Amino acid sequence: MLVLVTLGWGVSYYMMDLCLEEMGPLTLNAHRFLGAFVIAALLMFPKIKNVNRMTLKYSLYVSLSLVFVYIFATYGVKYTSQSNAGFFCATAVIFTPILTFFIKKTLPEKKLKFALVLCVIGMALMSFDAQFHVAIGDVLCLLCGFSYTFDLLITEKAVGHKEVNAFQLGVYQLGFTGVWMVILSVIFEDPVLPQTAGCWISTVFLAVFCTGIAYIVQAIAQQYTPATHVGVIFTLEPVFALIVAFLFAGERLLPRAYIGAALMLISLLVMELDFSRFQKR
Image (cartoon, rainbow, N blue to C red; front, side, top):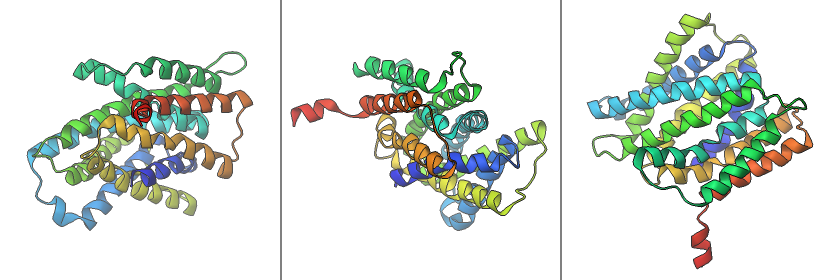
């Protein structure tokens, strides 16, 4: 299920790029999250009508982290390539053990230093141009990865409580995030509906598959695996994003950028794979 979610997120960068031609980033996110919540609520109303205060509280906390995640991600896609966006947003895999150390005082593994070096070199190769300028979109997507770390850690803590219903958490966080996005879009943008069939299809796809199903599945899956292990599967997201951008958006990167992408992917895998287990076998 998580692999399918990751595939959806890899495609989402292309879909977001299409939608941003007709509406602002905040408006797109408002449609995306409110649409996902309404569909989930209508289909699953019997399962979410009786919700306790603890579940609602953590849904609100998670939604606040998602607001930052998607503001950075959507503006990032607007100002950089889809390929770069996929890789920089995936850096949550690197940030998670670092923040876990500061929050839980859990020492990160020794391989973190090696993974960080590879990741930084990879980011430099992908983002710097000939004049050593960095695209603002790359920076925003990097902040998206950092913000998503908080989402993983808060969700992990939430589903660890017996009072928290993981399915309800997955649904209500969509509603809270949608409300925040509507407020922000009214303040900073002129909200509009999609104008073309392609934009409507992309918006619905983002709402149903990349948001509604994705975050409900993530909340349930994290009952059975810690946040850092979820990152193993999520390393596939930038790979899917790169393939979709190549096939459908016609994106072509500089040769050094492909080398950088490979180094970033290796750094993500190094960070998440359990090499000690392989050595024992």
